[in-house]
Amino acid sequence: MDDLKFGTRNKRGDWAPSARIEVAPLWSRPPQLGKILRWFPGYLWPWNAFHLATALAYWHFVVPDVETMKTLGWGWALRLYAVNAAAIFVMYGSIELFFYVRRVQGTRFKYNGKFPSEQPSDVFWFKSQNIDNFLRSFFFSIPLWTAVEVFMLWCFANGFVPWLSWADHPATLALLVLLAPAIHEVHFFLIHRLIHTPLLYKWIHSVHHNSVNPSPWSSLSMHPVEGFLYHAVVLWHLVIPSNPIVALFQLHIAGFGAVNGHIGFDKLEITEDSALDSHAYAHYLHHKYFEVNYGGDGVIPLDRWLGTWHDGSKDGDALMQARFEKKRARMNAKAARAPTPS
Ligand SMILES: [Zn+2]
Ligand SMILES: [Zn+2]
Image (cartoon, rainbow, N blue to C red):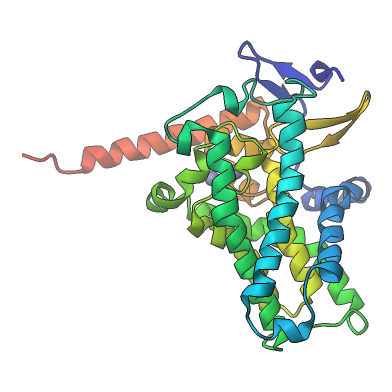
């Protein structure tokens, strides 16, 4: 596909889409029903449908029976870890293999013209972004994902929290399935904004931001505190009456869905003239500019409401620069007020 029909490439080889990132039309006033109906299929397909399908597959083939889950045990916990790790290895690994190792589409639709393997850096373990990100994912984030998963299933199995059945509460559970991506976005925004405060950023979140040019392995490359907070989104299903399948769906939006923001390509070409939208640009801009787009891609547009939204356009850039300018002025004024040491 000709990516220049969809965007522009600068002298450094970085490609940017021409269309601005749109937040979900649910928030347009006056309401635009037609727009909402056109947007809705893309909300479900393909990514959220995939996460729901994997949640169902887990429930039927991976998660042990309720009797087993009443007792915490290494056996079923390690089995869950093995499946989570294998699934991430296959899913993230295939995107990495095709688009970053074999480079089947070269740099077409790639936001950053360079590949992480071409840029060794001291900030990474073994100076390699790929090795560093891979090890952090498999040794910290996926075990923490599994730990909250085991805890959630143990609570359901023991009846510590309400378990709504599909037979008795189909409408409530269907609504919860539709809301799960929105819950993810709000939870992610809140914990993400929290770890962007100066002290927590330095201590925790800088690990994730070492990858300025993210690739699939960067998705779950986090400090353990962030790895826990991120997957703790599933704990909302212990507070709101829910069902373990919906809770697994919530967890898969986090675990498998993390790759969306870090694919690095705007579109993954499937055939000569069809491609899969990655929805990666909003979070790519976050990795590039740090202080924009703390949330997802605008289902619940908290960034827009709070003034930190960057839609990828020149206007978005101007708004960001104006905000940075104000911040600099505030910091300079503060520094001027501080007593000078004698
Ligand atoms: Zn990220
Ligand atoms: Zn961040």
